[in-house]
Length: 215
Ligand SMILES: C[S@@+](CC[C@H](N)C(=O)[O-])C[C@H]1O[C@@H](n2cnc3c(N)ncnc32)[C@H](O)[C@@H]1O
Image (cartoon, rainbow, N blue to C red; front, side, top):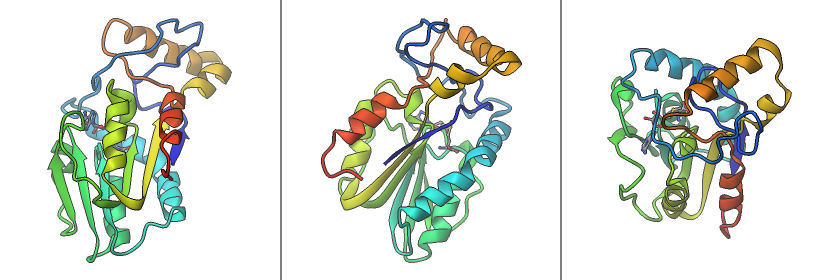
């Protein structure tokens, strides 16, 4: 299941919408442009969580997350979703909170949550292991997202659920006006010379939907 989320105003630099005239930069190659080592990274991810957690929790509940499940949160960031998962699966379940840079997960002490430093590109994931795999606002940063998507999918047990929440900047760029629009366009222009994330969930949606048997 892929859930587009609205454009994240806290994510300066995470910008792109394919095919939009004012962007005209085309499809992007990117590595992570707003690393967790940034001095404001914690605050940034707290704001992101404040924006999206309630809807993410609601969606995951609707997908049936429950006690005893083995879960993976890929690109766990500051960890609110992993913590929530831990509270839902209980002591009989388990959660791996994986991230390239785990510094913002250092205060996780819940016994059913394991923090794991991992580059989703190139790292082995256990095959057929998880009941539930979640990732939010991560694939957009990874040029090899199709490959990572395949790995996340393969990490599911038969019948397991893959919940992907990615950004689609098209709605805001198509409809926003005034200062908000100008701010977004400025972010995008600023990022032109460097690594640029992809703000268009549609290709990922298409890739995931093409995989038979995926939820
Ligand atoms: C925008 S944050 C989202 C964090 C969290 N998923 C959330 O929604 O609250 C993106 C996270 O993905 C992680 N990340 C980026 N590239 C990664 C990679 N190749 N492997 C693992 N994690 C990665 C970053 O370190 C960061 O913590």
